[in-house]
Amino acid sequence: MNVLWRTLLVLARARRRLRREGPIDPSTVTRMRIRVLPTDIDLLRHMNNGRYLSLFDLGRWDLLTRSGLVEAMTKQGWYAVVAAETITFRRSLELGQRFDLETRMIGHDDRAVYLEHRALVRGEIYARAIIRARILRRTGGTVPHDELFAAVGRPEGLPDIESWVHDWAAGSALPSTKRPAPSVWE
Image (cartoon, rainbow, N blue to C red):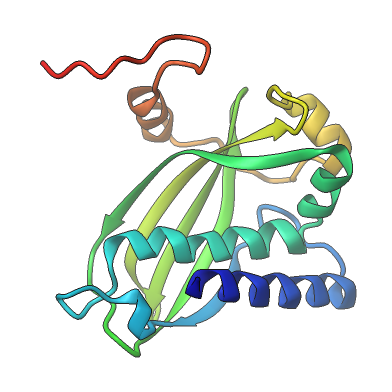
């Protein structure tokens, strides 16, 4: 529930900034300041590993709203889903500690867009996540990128995705929903 209220607050602020400042390029690094709340910590008194990904959602909502992508996708009947994510931790965030969340679209391939999130304290990276997201139609199916970019504009200056990100995406993929995926432990 805590993240729901934070999400609504981020959406309201992002919409206000979009109206006031106009849309940003999706490859812009967005930043927001977040404080570790009591509902974010675990029994070890640092931020729970699962909470990082929940809070990184806030960065995606901010970026997608301020770039105008949320509005364009809503008009088209599209929505984004996370297909895969990986996170690496360097240092722990403690109760009450403030950190900066940076978010940026880092590229795309024929089926997904990729984003990076970083949790920073005084400019030092404490955690980093790579997100693979797909754009889907509410009526079913994936939105091809040529259609997506025709509707929302193609971000300029997106770098090529590093080869390890492609390897990670391929290595962590599950079968499509149209194929069986039985749980067999070897």
